[in-house]
Length: 66
Image (cartoon, rainbow, N blue to C red):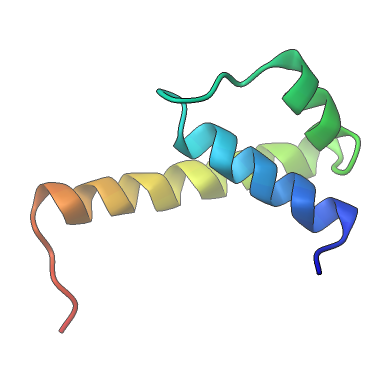
């Protein structure tokens, strides 16, 4: 259903989101970096970090959708 690039983005997102459960191994980094330029990978990483931060604020402050 997803192409290689989309699967790599999902893998990177899951890896960075679940750092306490999964290791961001060299193997995973290699798989992901084969699909993205350095610039794209940096941008993807920042987007993942920002979304994760907002989710943590939401959980921490018990924000509920209106």
